[in-house]
Image 1 (cartoon, rainbow, N blue to C red):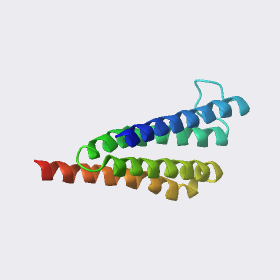
Image 2 (image 1 turned 120 degrees about the vertical axis):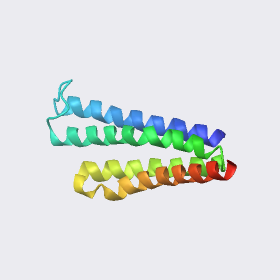
Image 3 (image 1 turned 180 degrees about the vertical axis):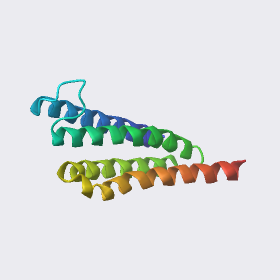
Length: 126
């Protein structure tokens, strides 16, 4: 389970780092709170941050639930795939929002896999 905990900390740290990018963009592009629109680059970074939160809400419970039925190491590995996908998503979305699909899929499919593994594991155990 230790790797699951390490990956959880990395997921949260990544989210916090994305939040710091949003704060930096607020200052650089003079988008004063509580505004969430303004300069396009601020809006892109803000959306990456918010989308990461939306995904993280499903990732974390899915990791821990799947680890109850399968190897915690595999659940942690899915979390690492999510982290890599989020970085790809950040780079793509910041450059051109239309190119974000690969990063989104790289982060989303591990969540789907974890949820499916949890469902199968629960059905096998029940």
